[in-house]
Structures are given as structure tokens and as C-alpha cells.
Image 1 (cartoon, rainbow, N blue to C red):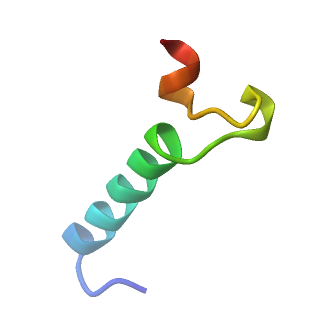
Image 2 (image 1 turned 90 degrees about the vertical axis):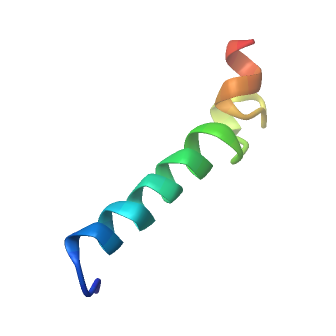
Length: 38
């Protein structure tokens, strides 16, 4: 649970950034989405 909307938004933005830029995806042959798109 978050104490403020801003805190929740910050945590969500960080999670989305990690998911889209740093986390390898099995469906992309264990590449990050950014590496796959390049």
C-alpha cells in the first residue's frame, strides 16, 4: 500500500521502466525489449 498517489505513481513508473528496458523476456529469447527492438 502506498501513502500517497505520487508514491504509487513513482513505484509504478520504475516497475514499467524495469520491465520494458532491463528485464529479459523469455518470449524474446531472453533479450530485453529494447535490445530486441534494436
